[in-house]
Length: 114
Image 1 (spheres, one colour):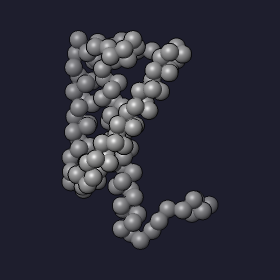
Image 2 (cartoon, rainbow, N blue to C red; image 1 turned 30 degrees about the vertical axis):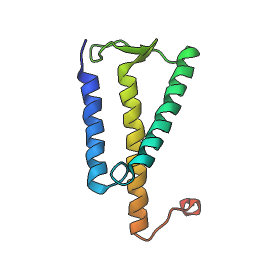
Image 3 (spheres, helix red, strand yellow; image 1 turned 120 degrees about the horizontal axis):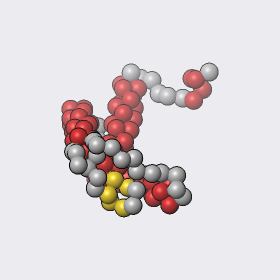
Protein backbone atom coordinates (compact mmCIF):
# COMPACT_ATOMS: atom_id res chain seq x y z
CA UNK A 1 0.00 0.00 0.00
CA UNK A 2 1.41 3.34 -1.07
CA UNK A 3 0.14 6.88 -0.79
CA UNK A 4 2.27 8.27 -3.63
CA UNK A 5 -0.47 8.75 -6.23
CA UNK A 6 -2.98 10.06 -3.69
CA UNK A 7 -0.45 12.56 -2.29
CA UNK A 8 0.40 13.77 -5.80
CA UNK A 9 -3.28 14.33 -6.54
CA UNK A 10 -3.67 16.23 -3.27
CA UNK A 11 -0.64 18.36 -4.15
CA UNK A 12 -2.15 19.14 -7.55
CA UNK A 13 -5.45 20.08 -5.92
CA UNK A 14 -3.50 22.35 -3.58
CA UNK A 15 -1.79 24.02 -6.55
CA UNK A 16 -5.16 24.65 -8.18
CA UNK A 17 -6.42 26.12 -4.90
CA UNK A 18 -3.40 28.46 -4.79
CA UNK A 19 -4.13 29.67 -8.32
CA UNK A 20 -7.78 30.05 -7.42
CA UNK A 21 -6.88 32.06 -4.32
CA UNK A 22 -4.30 34.23 -6.07
CA UNK A 23 -6.61 35.27 -8.92
CA UNK A 24 -9.94 34.91 -7.04
CA UNK A 25 -11.33 32.67 -9.77
CA UNK A 26 -13.78 30.23 -8.19
CA UNK A 27 -14.03 29.49 -4.49
CA UNK A 28 -12.54 32.85 -3.49
CA UNK A 29 -14.87 34.64 -5.87
CA UNK A 30 -18.19 32.84 -5.29
CA UNK A 31 -17.80 29.80 -3.04
CA UNK A 32 -21.42 28.62 -3.22
CA UNK A 33 -21.54 28.63 -7.00
CA UNK A 34 -18.11 27.00 -7.26
CA UNK A 35 -19.09 24.24 -4.82
CA UNK A 36 -22.30 23.52 -6.73
CA UNK A 37 -20.45 23.39 -10.04
CA UNK A 38 -17.74 21.14 -8.62
CA UNK A 39 -20.36 18.84 -7.08
CA UNK A 40 -22.25 18.62 -10.38
CA UNK A 41 -19.04 17.72 -12.21
CA UNK A 42 -18.09 15.09 -9.64
CA UNK A 43 -21.54 13.51 -9.72
CA UNK A 44 -21.52 13.44 -13.53
CA UNK A 45 -18.10 11.81 -13.75
CA UNK A 46 -18.84 9.34 -10.95
CA UNK A 47 -22.02 8.27 -12.75
CA UNK A 48 -19.94 7.98 -15.91
CA UNK A 49 -17.45 5.75 -14.06
CA UNK A 50 -20.20 3.59 -12.57
CA UNK A 51 -21.73 3.14 -16.03
CA UNK A 52 -18.35 2.19 -17.48
CA UNK A 53 -17.66 -0.22 -14.64
CA UNK A 54 -21.13 -1.75 -14.97
CA UNK A 55 -20.63 -2.27 -18.71
CA UNK A 56 -17.23 -3.85 -18.12
CA UNK A 57 -15.36 -1.02 -19.89
CA UNK A 58 -13.44 0.41 -16.91
CA UNK A 59 -11.14 -1.69 -14.80
CA UNK A 60 -8.92 -0.89 -11.85
CA UNK A 61 -5.25 -1.13 -12.68
CA UNK A 62 -3.17 -2.59 -9.86
CA UNK A 63 0.12 -0.83 -9.20
CA UNK A 64 2.41 -0.08 -6.29
CA UNK A 65 1.66 3.67 -6.27
CA UNK A 66 -1.98 3.34 -5.18
CA UNK A 67 -3.46 2.76 -1.73
CA UNK A 68 -5.57 -0.23 -2.72
CA UNK A 69 -8.62 1.30 -0.99
CA UNK A 70 -11.79 0.79 -3.03
CA UNK A 71 -14.90 2.96 -2.76
CA UNK A 72 -16.85 0.46 -4.88
CA UNK A 73 -15.85 -2.52 -6.99
CA UNK A 74 -13.26 -1.33 -9.55
CA UNK A 75 -13.41 2.26 -8.16
CA UNK A 76 -10.25 3.19 -6.23
CA UNK A 77 -10.11 6.02 -3.71
CA UNK A 78 -7.70 7.91 -5.97
CA UNK A 79 -10.36 8.14 -8.70
CA UNK A 80 -12.44 10.48 -6.55
CA UNK A 81 -9.45 12.79 -6.06
CA UNK A 82 -8.56 12.60 -9.75
CA UNK A 83 -12.09 13.56 -10.76
CA UNK A 84 -12.06 16.44 -8.27
CA UNK A 85 -8.76 17.64 -9.74
CA UNK A 86 -10.11 17.29 -13.29
CA UNK A 87 -13.20 19.36 -12.48
CA UNK A 88 -11.26 21.98 -10.52
CA UNK A 89 -8.59 22.35 -13.18
CA UNK A 90 -11.17 22.73 -15.92
CA UNK A 91 -13.08 25.37 -13.99
CA UNK A 92 -9.91 27.30 -13.09
CA UNK A 93 -8.64 27.28 -16.67
CA UNK A 94 -12.03 28.21 -18.12
CA UNK A 95 -12.47 31.12 -15.71
CA UNK A 96 -8.90 32.33 -16.18
CA UNK A 97 -9.12 32.30 -19.99
CA UNK A 98 -12.52 33.97 -19.87
CA UNK A 99 -11.14 36.76 -17.68
CA UNK A 100 -8.07 37.20 -19.86
CA UNK A 101 -10.22 37.51 -22.97
CA UNK A 102 -12.57 39.95 -21.24
CA UNK A 103 -9.61 42.03 -20.04
CA UNK A 104 -8.14 42.26 -23.53
CA UNK A 105 -11.43 43.50 -24.95
CA UNK A 106 -11.77 40.38 -27.08
CA UNK A 107 -14.57 37.90 -27.00
CA UNK A 108 -14.48 34.44 -28.42
CA UNK A 109 -16.65 33.78 -31.43
CA UNK A 110 -16.88 30.58 -33.38
CA UNK A 111 -16.55 32.53 -36.63
CA UNK A 112 -13.00 33.57 -35.64
CA UNK A 113 -11.74 30.03 -36.18
CA UNK A 114 -11.95 30.27 -39.98
